[in-house]
Image 1: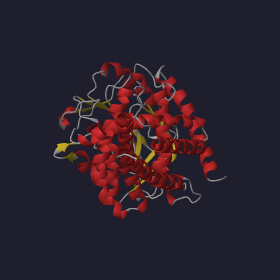
Image 2 (image 1 turned 180 degrees about the horizontal axis):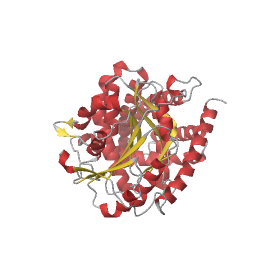
Image 3 (image 1 turned 60 degrees about the vertical axis):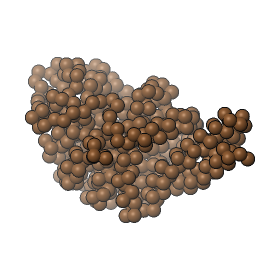
Image 4 (image 1 turned 45 degrees about the vertical axis):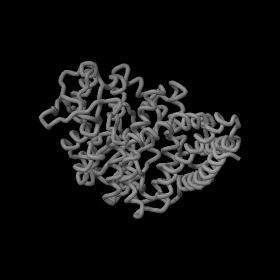
Length: 450
């Protein structure tokens, strides 16, 4: 056996051992338990905490933004709810003006218009500093919430030890292309395996931006650190959700995952935008992983395994794949062992996911293995080599003082919340969210052996 074949065989064997141990532990810890925590118990109270919903938007499609706001306006939460829509210097302000007008007579809604684009993080902070609710819910402008999301997240946040909680994410445009179908399955696995296992120990490592709730008292303690993140002396603007989550954990708060608080978000439907998104996410993940390493001694040993599995695993897979391809190109011999191990692990993983989700479509997630090896691994390698690059890749940022902020209430609504377009989108997705929520409960019953 030549050097290339040996390298590929050893690397893929180590990857198989690590991945099997890691994924088995992940699936085990992701299974629901019959023991409810104090925060899961319903507390009957006449004084529900007030919630501020913050929606930053930049050049958002009016129909998409309308669907988002309709879902927020339709929340069945019994406490006080205020909504702050922050327009981050959009160039299509005239196009979204009718959406703003639709809520001019709704006292729950306020609109903050930023004259220049400052980035999502600073747009959020502009609203946080103007609001005063007990809890803050960050929602992306392309996300639609199920009607009970606020109620279920608030129920989890009843425990004062919890600083942040996220809901389950799905792809609202799942049926558009083969890629959106894959991403939707990727989201399911990320939420119901990775986050669910981390939540067993109160340490979800990233409360995802489209739907994450924070305790204001904890948020205010961390706001300056959140706003002024630097990496190698340069401002770091993207990856705000992961960074804020790590700051919460560093401050001693728990971070949680609420699987039945379902939110549907728009995902890339073409490879190029998807890879740009993955590059941005990879850079933020690497940056904040370095920050999270200091936390590991204080957390359960599973979280150390989680960090090792997510970082060392792809490295071993990349080494094996490169050696196998080189072996094929140079010696014209097929790396059967490497191919067999990768194929076997793919089939097992997809079968387990299909069983847990009770959906055969997860068998088609096998295609993601090819995307991972030939596209995502090179993107991650490039991200690691360009960590100092802070380009958003889909937006441009600039500095803005407080004088650049304007809070407005737009009179004379031009369209109501039930205007055509956004309401149609929200209605169809809301039905899908209800179906997925009930499907998730069924899936959990199978996993529990019920």
